[in-house]
Amino acid sequence: MPEDLTPTSIEAVLERLSEKAETLPRRLKQCADYVAANPDRVAVSTVAELSQAAGVQPSAFMRFCQELGFSGFSQMQKVFRSDHASRWPDYRTRLAALHEHGTESPFALLAEFVEVGRMSLENLMTSVDPAALEEAVTRLAAVRTIHLVGFRRAFPVTSYFSYAFAKMQVPAILHSGLGGMDACDTIRPGDAVIAVSFAPYTERTIEIAGEAKARGADVIAITDLVTSPLVRLGAIPLLVTELDVGAFRALSASLSVAIVLAVAVGAAREKEK
Amino acid sequence: MPEDLTPTSIEAVLERLSEKAETLPRRLKQCADYVAANPDRVAVSTVAELSQAAGVQPSAFMRFCQELGFSGFSQMQKVFRSDHASRWPDYRTRLAALHEHGTESPFALLAEFVEVGRMSLENLMTSVDPAALEEAVTRLAAVRTIHLVGFRRAFPVTSYFSYAFAKMQVPAILHSGLGGMDACDTIRPGDAVIAVSFAPYTERTIEIAGEAKARGADVIAITDLVTSPLVRLGAIPLLVTELDVGAFRALSASLSVAIVLAVAVGAAREKEK
DNA sequence: GTCTAAATGGAATATAAATTCCATTCGCAA
DNA sequence: TTGCGAATGGAATTTATATTCCATTTAGAC
Image 1 (cartoon, each protein chain N blue to C red):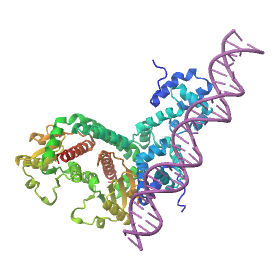
Image 2: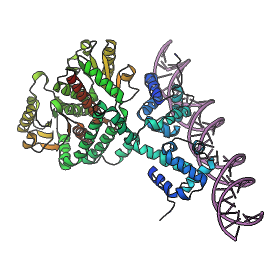
Image 3: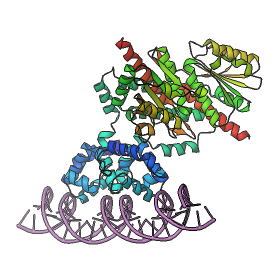
């Protein structure tokens, strides 16, 4: 059994730690205790900071890392950093990997999309601010008419809203852009607009949201980044990061937010009656 | 108003980001978007890594940091590192937050839908027949015009198809039922219909699919059960089982199938040219 | 107590990263 | 088109950080 194989995950490091803890000399034991108690700090600190926090000299911390089977602190930190990253993967890299293999058979493609969709959903729990979601529901429940604005890729989302609100008898208008009607004219104070748009943002959506805001209507934004123009103009933001494959982005997360909003608003309105 | 007060929290940084996003030059905007989409990476990466991931030079990233009001990258990273732990809660703490808000809150509902969506996606891999998927792609790639039929809950799916096909210049017609036009008249031999319907099946969808079949067009069905009327009339079935929460069914799985079909068909058509 | 091996602290060095600088390119107005 | 200022890329420089080295201290064995 190779005693000093270098650990490759945080768990492995902590395990090695508990094995060795007894036999470690005093200062090195201090390092071990500190790391065991604050594993999250390792990824974002320097040797100097950690050693000081642990109450030892930097050189002692170095020896501690080597005792664990690493060549030095940097190698150990790399494990803590990349493991952190694996919980929150870098999509661009993943995406590149995706293109390399699986686009041959449609079924392989499906597998990739399933994976991407799952990741999107996972993200959703952390990207959507619970307070903003609650606020959005409260506003939408109190409002007279809900206007649904979103074109191109966002249109499936708004059309789903339209279906769901209709089913629950919540007054909602789907602005399809059909017939060249000016959506803005129908928006009045006491209404709310749900604006859905992702980068690259559709000009028309931003315009309508801006106009609605100017007219004194609430604006709820389902969008992807804090840099979105919708956020800029003061909408309540529900941030959804979808991953894209090639030129196409998934919609699972956005649709889930839509369903939640619709159901919650429907329930809230039911309660008021 | 002191324009360049340096932000002291991640929120403040992201806020500043959304303010400035529009006025930033191209490369700096790339940085902004990357940081907005991957705030977690900032704490554990170097300038070189981040700039490469954002697709810019390190010096551009530096200028970006300064634009935000920091003296440089290090100062900005310090902000991200200091509350890195508190900002990125793991699954356990997320559940705790969930309990705090109570099971009645919209956020709890969101958690439920995320879970359901994930399960739906997993099911997808087993419910969709790889051979049928391949067959569907082959047929759709060979066909002149693709007709998209699906109403009510299925409409977001067909409207997504419409968007995706348009983007790839695949001739497709979205039958919206608007204007009372009879969709059937436009369907001819050598065309294909993608019919989307779930129990309880929309009468009109079945009718159009049947008529299309009678006229010698291929029919691809995205539906939920083998007992679906669409399957009975001889369509190529892509079976999707969505789970529902209350009276509302998720759409993640259906949308994923739609994306896969669209991408695969687009690629296949590209190849033929 | 003295010897020895291990452990420690701190300074010196090597390495890697951040930051700046400047020549070149780009986009726009005249 | 030409000229101008802003924006950019890449190399040079500075700064921070990790790592090593060695003199000194400590703890245990005889």
